[in-house]
Length: 156
Image (cartoon, rainbow, N blue to C red; front, side):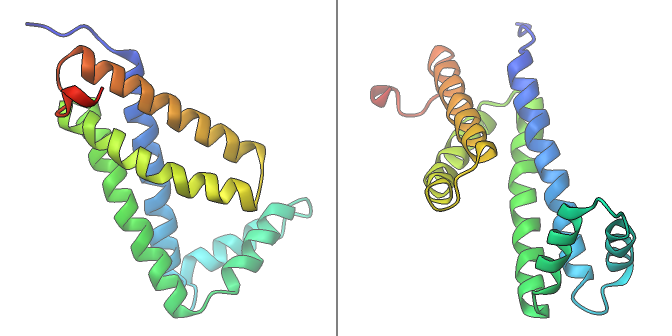
């Protein structure tokens, strides 16, 4: 039986894959800065030369405040999260039920942390992230229930 195309699943998958790619960049950047900074530092300094680069200046100040141990932890943590998002994204692209369940569980697990962050450092982007994540979870739960893929039928 051929499944109908599901644009929302594809968009969620693409979103997960973009987050994975960004986290790979952060992870590799943090790991490469542990020593002398290498190419990443050169690139960041080139960006910082922009007279209107206030955000780049702030980012550079934060990055240079980390020691080698912190950068290693950030790098490894980012790569671990990137692998989770990559698995979710690829699984969703192939429309696997396990990927939908994994996405629900992983996304729900981050919502309390996101709310905590919002309470301590409120911003509009953080509110948008929480709303999008809640909508993704609700959509996937509805879809999993409709297709009888959710392993806990009685709880829905």
